[in-house]
Amino acid sequence: MLTIFGGRVNDLESILIEERIPDRWESRIRKRMGLTFAAFNFTVFKVERGIDEKKYKAMIAAEAAACTASDAK
Image 1 (cartoon, helix red, strand yellow):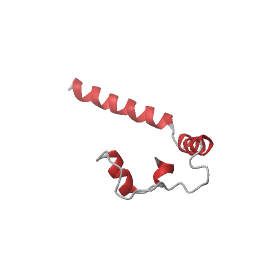
Image 2 (image 1 turned 90 degrees about the vertical axis):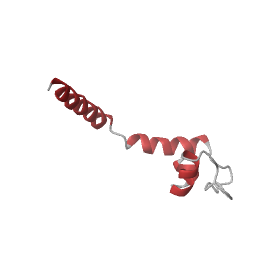
Image 3 (image 1 turned 120 degrees about the horizontal axis):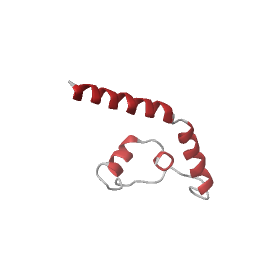
Image 4 (image 1 turned 60 degrees about the horizontal axis):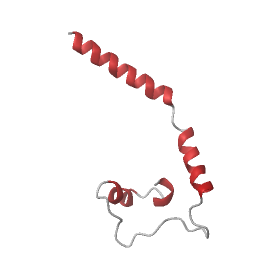
């Protein structure tokens, strides 16, 4: 979605919330071959590299500990 919609929030809102394609919508991909698997995978790889699972797991553990502590009271 990041690649296809070019980060346009209004387009993303229509697709994700209203589950419809916006009026007069056109893909932001203007290359001759369109969106290739290589281009898509390159974008996914950049997003994946930006995700730090250790931070997420630490946050989940902290929330679980806080929930356990509040339940013990």
